Length: 573
Image (cartoon, rainbow, N blue to C red; front, side, top):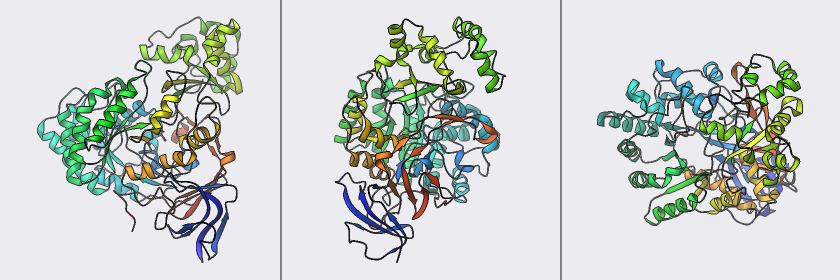
């Protein structure tokens, strides 16, 4: 008798091959049989009838920021709500190890600024049990999770650990400091880190306005760290680049790939000011591939969209004196004030006195802002933008925005696609996804709590791209599944998962595909210290199985926590 048998489902095995009706047998944490009806003769202690549903590998999300949350939330939400069975964290050069005791608060302020995670929640929630990166891994190894977790060495924390007060961006590391960073990176990888990450974008700043250490570091520092990775023999080199500067970064990207002989991946988005640059970047990836260098772009499943609301990090009226005067009121009292015509008139008549050029762009570009209702299409029609509606109806776009924010009991949302939507279509993004040298990522689970809610992207990829898209071509369902299973798993050397095959890890989703969806983003106050974050649940996960244990049944947690720390590459036994 097997532990679990899944029958009558449509198996989409993660390899981008044709679906077929079949069945799967699981013993312990391993798939022991998979094939067409009749493959599994023995019964299961737990029989799952997947009739009318699809059966897939669990999602492997390669771009998350659960570095702190993993120390207090075993369910790794939102990942746990969306069929994710493995997460990779420590991206974009920020994290919490290695860390001297005196630098802990600084690392929190860095993470708060870069990833918009409330500092109070981090301060209250993190149980500091480490100094070195191997000690951080050991602390994680003592915990249980709903999914497996893998960690990367973050450049910001590493530089601060080695250089101390000299780690600020703009100060070059000495040759000896570079040797130390290389040695510590090698140590981290040998202890089980899956890679190293860095940030090179001016958008990544601490709450104090300081760039992530190493943002403009000389390429010799990155090359030195790459040599440490090469000595360890494995590891992905992940970097957040400044999008207009991606082509000029390819010199050192290629050099790093040549040294490590392992994948290099950069955040690959489309910037409004350089709408066609992505085509050139794909060409550079192709040239690197032709030269035997594994340089890849990591692309998002939808626009990098900022959600704005009264309770979020941003709304079009922040900084205006009459709005800021309401800051100390509770939510109900504030809404009462906001609904008063005289308060609205006062706020609309003002401007943010100190808004940067970037803030002015995000808060006042009405042609790039939409009212977000329900599970709204993430490919909104230009004719429905606030600017278009205002022009059509003879109204003020600012007034329309204000009124919508007041809907739904003051929970109204505005959607601002910051990247990947300059042409007001997702056709370019689709083309990027279809390219063999890109990988699916950038969901940022655990981060951007008050402005971005993309941790639901693994679910969205199926419901939108394989079923619901109406303004352009879709993608085939087996390919979408392949993008976030076999492709992402193998990218990080996790060859024991991401595919439904005999001998592979029993990480499985049974999905009611016809009804699969994401609900509307909603602000909640469920972080430590009751700090706020946007959440968006998945709908349609009949079962999620991780390491052979059912962790989700009918969209509800079962309480099982089979997930563990993953140390280094994983191969079939």
